[in-house]
Length: 367
Image 1 (tube, rainbow, N blue to C red):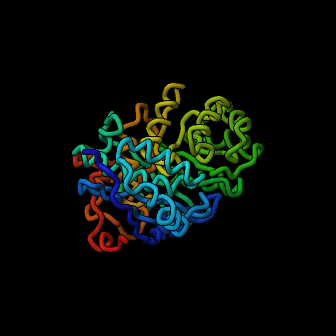
Image 2 (image 1 turned 180 degrees about the vertical axis):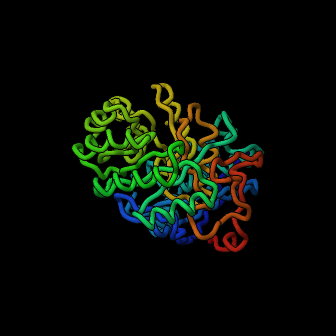
Image 3 (image 1 turned 120 degrees about the vertical axis):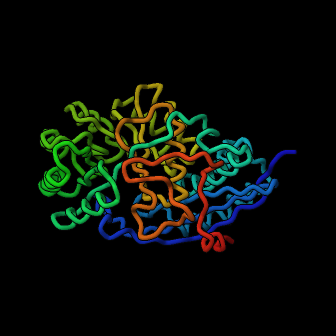
């Protein structure tokens, strides 16, 4: 008998960032996040969980819009449909709802979780992996002077040894921040930079030689997302460039590849529209010689677990640490048991599906 989607429920939650680790980037501060948790129940009694990790400043989506579209549009259309192939459900969501990548990804994560639990295998296996069971991670550093020092101290206390510094606000201040971060971290620590598209071409070209002098490993998204020609020019200065905001879906990825505008692609489960699509994008990137890493929109435990399984399943993962920060960024965790992360790496378990369970109080919030 075919397993079908029996019900889709949601629960909303808002969490505050750890004030010491609060990210201040070119797009503004990320001090709190409203999330929508998604539960898919199947006709076989299996449940899968997902997470809509979206902020209006970043994607134009939030918990309110996600809840509205899932309840009024996606859930009615998906209920009664076969659970597999999950790609068919994703295609149906695309026909019903334009854009809103993070909203559809939240449902997709829950569908993939339910599918992997039905098979009684970890999601990474259902996605074609795992190719690895440990993923190195890093944490963003931002703010100036005392703020930066507090952020670094909190990151080290959490076990982090690899970092990226937020830049793209004001070039002289940006360079001062990177210099101070290097002083704090020491000459041998892994250190990257992330401009979030905040620099002009002239600023990026001016910054690169100095970033190289500071021993910076990479420059993430130096220019606004569609300036691929300018990004290629920056890349030719010899500092590896990571494409992030430039790549949401497959079409964006192809544009970046054709423009030769990146050395590494930062994939998000949310931007990609779900775990399966993220892995397919990674396969295309690998076929063109581009490794990927898992970027972060400040995901919670469910979203971080999805990041982990995708990172384990992609064929070519960058040697640069990914941004699977999960419970480290917020003042509380949503999982009954946190991911196995010590700040240096996060480890894949062998439990089925995402391999995580929400806290009991949150499980009671679904409706």
